[in-house]
Each structure stands twice: as structure tokens, then as C-alpha cells.
Length: 183
Image 1 (cartoon, rainbow, N blue to C red):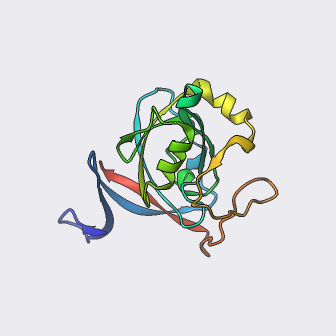
Image 2 (tube, rainbow, N blue to C red):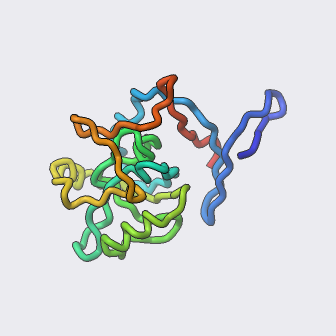
Image 3 (cartoon, one colour):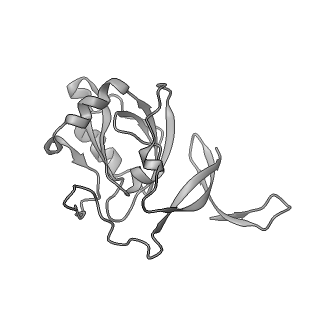
């Protein structure tokens, strides 16, 4: 954490993240629990995107994957759990192929190896992803029994509708979200 000022206004707390490929400056924003950013439509272009995901103590990265080299498929995000880390970024979508994890290519990894890389990637995980529109309908119809939920091997509470309920929801009905200021 650092404080940043433009010289004219009061310094504000910011998060500074430095990796081998990128330097990011982020500010914290409180978002309502019933946020609209998780209802964004996936990108129509298929450009690679870098997305920071902060692992949660309960729920981990908050996503499930399918695919892998043994299936001759990319590692695809098959599910994003409501209000968990991946969902809170507002930048990840079902059908996104994970190309790199913290700068390490996983495109030739088998499924189980990709799961282990993601589980052991640390608390701040930089995912390089590319959206595959054609995979999205298949993944929406898929059965959850073949999915690996990356949750630090802790149990999540699933409501009757299948949505995750946070055990530590903010009393104000808001939760923090980090917004990129400079990348």
C-alpha cells in the first residue's frame, strides 16, 4: 500500500503491484453487493487481457476450469462464482481461455497441472486470458461434476439457487474492489 497525490489534492491510499511484466497502481472502490459489473457482456474481440485476481481466504479464486492439453483444448473458465474473487474483478467471463498464470504459460498444461498452478499461484494472481465466444454456449450447458472449483480446499456455502453466499458480507452492503488507475 502507498499513498499517492497529484500535488494538488490530498494523498489517497493506493495498491502498487509490480510483476515481471507489468506495474499497476490501483485504488479501492466500494461496490454494492448487488453490483452490475458482473453482468458485463464478454469482449467481442479475442485480444489477450491481463486480469488481477486477489485470492480470498474462503472461495479462493472463485472460478472453475475445464479443458487442458490432454483434451486438445485450452484451459477454459467454465464457471465464475457469484461475489467471489473472479466475479469481483468484473473482467473474467465463462469462455475465457487462461493463457498465462503470473506470466507462466499454461497453454500446453494438462488439466490437473493447470489446477495445481492456479491453486499455488499466491494471493495476487495475474491471469492472461483470451475470450473464445464459440466455447461459451458449451460451457454454460456443462455439468458441474467435471469441474474443479479453485477454492483453497475450503467449503463454500451454496444457497438454494446455487449462488455463493459470503459468510462475511459487509454490514453496509458493500465490498471492496480494486480499480486499475495506471497499468
